[in-house]
Length: 337
Image: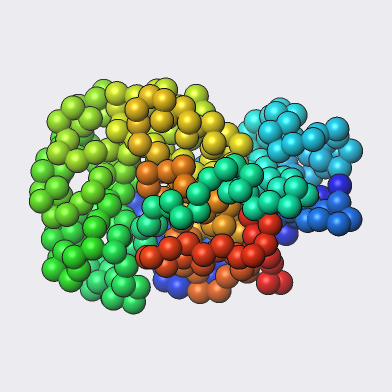
């Protein structure tokens, strides 16, 4: 087995702003595994908020080289377990490797990933399309640019309700809102009352991840369901979210890949919580991987490649009506460079 990796820039169509950062370009790291006959691709984007850089991601991947190339692993799950110590401080790097392992593993078996997992690709929820924080005029323009039935609206400003009121004038689409930890419990409860009237489906991570007392109040009094994001990063967080959130939004890169994400989904379902997988502005490599496990989910946020000015890969094609998978095994992604 041969391990290689590449650092690439993903230019965005528009400046993407959330409550704690803005960016025009997203750095990403692509992992490739090859055994002489088959190849597997994986991806993780960088993220300054979590301290994940191209440098420390590739450093951890290099540290795993002997395990990957000479280790006696037979499955992605086994590789993930064997690499836990190496990737303990860097789940983003482990995600890219785990994704590539699933890709080559299923290709060797002549199956698409969803086929191996025995999932129905016709049973995939519609992805939302994300509108970052901007002037109201530019947010409206972004909606008109991509006419979609479901938008995730990033909030965390001093005039959040005004934004939603104005956007509602221009579309009948369902809204989801994501405050990225920017609100207090009082604000979240108060805002939920009007947001519910404005066609908002749920609120994602309104409070800081450590504000457990506040989340108990929001969970109890909110007029809208509340989804965890920053409060649910790794497997041990799932149980902690019960009674604080109605559901969880899992990010493959933060969780450490497909392997732990599958366990998190099943755990959350067993606790009666809704499940969602979100993206971190990946190319079609990472988005294609999400699409394969999407039949397990209640909600999905896999619009990352749609936000790019130029993709570096080809994979699944997403429309409001359906997700079209390429006629290729594994996750089905191929690089365009």
